[in-house]
Length: 133
Image 1 (spheres, helix red, strand yellow):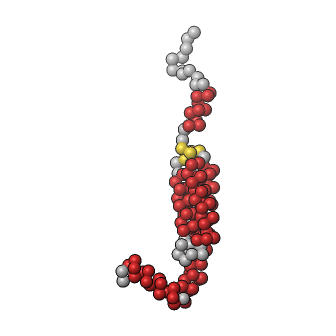
Image 2: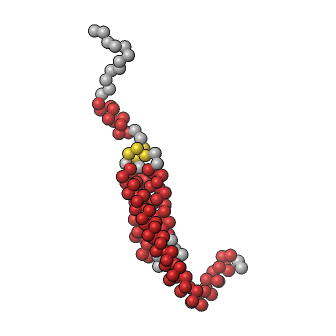
Image 3: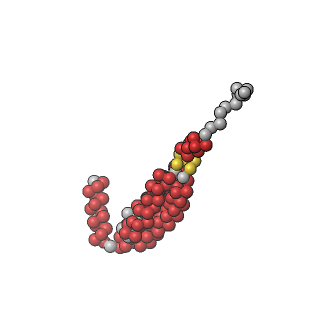
């Protein structure tokens, strides 16, 4: 019974598969956070887009989702599907909501504010309170 001294005993299959499951980082947690931010941007967009200058908040939420999903995908070895979905939805929502907010503020809200003299007086009063001029 001569055993080869350089040869190691076989590793049990359960141990190696357990080691393979726990190795590496998962992107699932941050992917879920990115999807929640996308959902919050999508749900809040109809209300916030109507308010001048606050219409960019849903686009900022989508931008945060893009950043979180991108960070989740960097270095992750498993669970990439959720983060990739959050990244794709975040980019689409960022472009869509950012474009709508820009057009709304430039074409509709800004001319309406400039043409409404009483509102212009209120805006100047608030600016004087904030900035002190």
